[in-house]
Image (tube, rainbow, N blue to C red; front, side):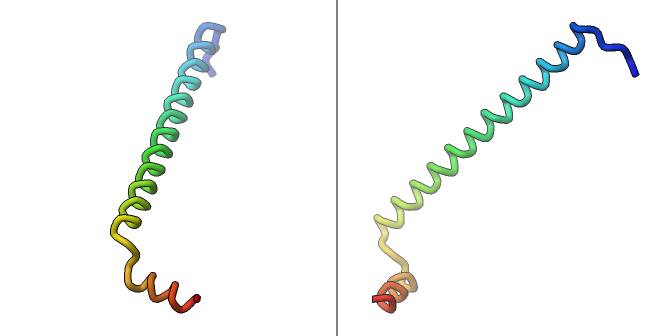
Length: 62
């Protein structure tokens, strides 16, 4: 096993820390993207109304 001095170890840990922060930012971006897809889907359903089979389910439940 090669000997790691303090500088090499710190460089390695900083690299890992940087990658972890990049992955965290990617996850936050994907979360925001899926939230916006969900909002757009809800808005479009409200604008277009319900599908016929969904209307039938609601009528049966009443």
